[in-house]
Amino acid sequence: MAKVARARVLAVVAVYVLLAGCDAGGKAAPPAPSPSASRAPERPAALAGGVCQLWDYPMVEGVLGVRFTVAVATQLDTTQTCLIQVDASDPSLALSASPTRADADVYAKTVVPKGATAVTGLGKAAYRIAVPPAGAGPAVEVGWLSPKGWLYVLRYTAPAGTPPADLAPLGDKLVELGKRLDPA
Image 1 (cartoon, rainbow, N blue to C red):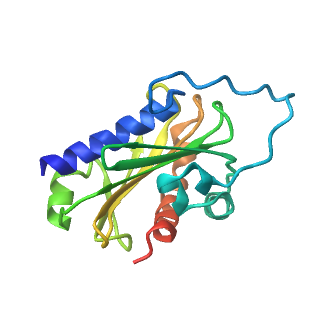
Image 2 (cartoon, rainbow, N blue to C red; image 1 turned 120 degrees about the horizontal axis):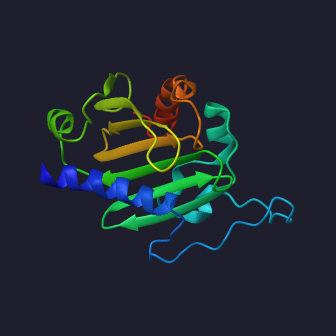
């Protein structure tokens, strides 16, 4: 049980490291180019490696209606995380994956956050929760226990100043995206 909780904490830490603009080595990321600067051709998300290989920008855009163009992957112990964005001021979408031997009961007791809503039709057990702003804008998180023995956490974080109510429709869309990332 402690491994499951630790894996969730590591996944969240990895997401916050990415959101803070640091790479896995703790070095500050280079500043983003100004909007007037010419942009390099878009690289597929899968080229970032790790769990970024599970999705591509057109699939995410088709489900969420948001076009992302930059992907960053990191790994801490056995937890892999992928963050996609357009730039630092835009929304971000993070996916963390950790292997586990937990069953649905252990998952529900040790991983699911308090106040979360149970989700059906995604993995062995799943939840959805609204996350209040904490340094960035509000977020919506969907987590699930895969039949293949993985813990997944998918989090959409809106830009600062976004009203939390604006994210309500995204919960169902994140569940749909989760089903595409981890088909049963």
